Image: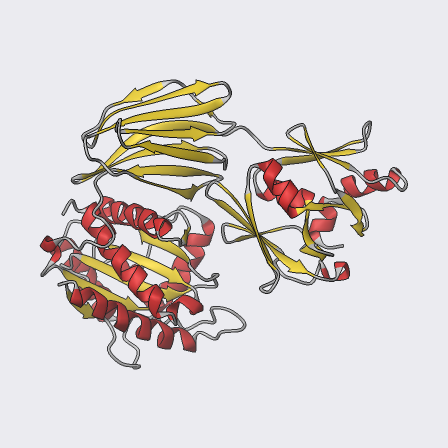
Length: 457
């Protein structure tokens, strides 16, 4: 028995007891038509469009790519899509949320629409799923997100952040004539009514109105706010930025700043389909193009590798000493236009620690220059971890605004970033993006804009 079938066993047995009957599907008490257990015996499926609409999620069905994507706030759930119900166990993994695999079967294309597994989809979006025997119904209950509001300031840039403990739907309204930005978080509860004042906005008020959390932000005259959302733990954060430089504008004061760009080349396999020997080639070609984009913007850019020959981890890290910015690019097992961002810090999660061990593998070999790097860091620089976090946060927002799917930035003990003493980032990108010139231009622009915003330039 597959793991997801084991988790569905109780519901499956209950449904089997209702001989010949199709289950009623209730989402937060609202009936969803079309639920069935005939596609995969004992497993409740529902039409993707109707199920998503009742959940408050957006759905995209890409039959050509064999994928169904549901988006609720910053939560992104992707399901493999198969044409034969007998193959729902074949894709591995079949269900993924924010890049992390979850138990469950694939979606099924049936006739003219896609059907998604109720339990796996509902739980992936943070809901609870149960069978109600008295009414032969499958009930899905999504929690009401609780949210708080805070102000974060990075140099001359300031952000208003709404933190939700569960994914949820929100809408924004910018009334330019009155200079007011409104955010409405559907089915959400503020932990408490709150009011905040800031340097880049006049006042922000958060309150509960008829079961919806509403925020009203009085803007400074002429302000043009940007709003985006990013995953955060099991929930999400909605960020409002007020004074970040426009994406098309390059701050003149970045000219002459020294950056180092690093192409990763680990010595273990990244995926079964793409051996690690390919990573060095892909990342080096990508970094060469990024360096060229940044140089055209006026930066003094140095690369850790200019040819196919390997360069030690200690030597690469050493080049970051005294740099204004350091970016290390690695290949990840990711979908197109998705990126992971890491900063120098303790590991915030086990998977981050696992990656750090992989990326730091070369440090197991004793080298005299490793201590030299550490001495240079201690003698010449004071680690500024806040600078890296600020840059990572700004970058996640900038990329999200340009259509990228961005994981919440994660701290990890990454040796390659030690020379930059906190003023560095490590990025994981897909093989498709590493080969895509448009991704190069998008990432280079986002890196520069986010760095300028984070240092207040």
